Length: 288
Image 1 (tube, rainbow, N blue to C red):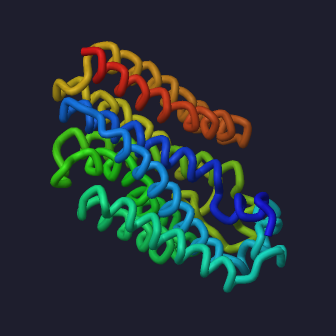
Image 2: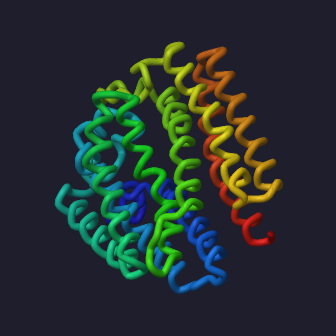
């Protein structure tokens, strides 16, 4: 088995972004405690990478027959025949157990949240993708927003969910609707080959564009919650507001034109939005 095949199985780029989000929240949680335990940070990164990789492996096992139908996924290791389902299952189970053990060693709640994330992503979100765009994205947004929550909880000795953790979760949760639907708009033709219905109305139309725009509007006040509740200063509030307004403008352009190029701009905008806001929150939290 080549690294390139394993990398496609675990979706390395997506997994790295997930771990990045969790690691930033962990540092914010440590800062709230007054000290950083670097060995725990390493455990979170490795454990988070393994758990996310496991969830992606299970997702590809379940969707192997559907992946053969789509241009963007037909070269994945299982549908292309470069890896058997059994091999992928062994890898997924091994990574899942090892990752859960590492995260659970930080505190029990972190371990439980990681298991919940795998189950929800692989066995609830995955089958919903062929039934309802809104339901699928809503369910998928929960495990997708858990990394910052898990990261923050991992920094707490006794594992607790407090207000900051819920704010971090909320920002990533709302962001994902716009992020998912921008990607779905760009890839709708390919998704339909496998019967996936990820756009709100099931197709590229005014309804899908309006619903996407509404969630971009909701993201504006949600992104300001750290400043509103006093966890972030005016700098993080200002940067979050600017990023959210740019994101909102991109969503408006999709609403106005309903064209793939505008959806692609919104998609790439979503890739930058979250890291910028989270890093700014961390910097602001450290220096204040």
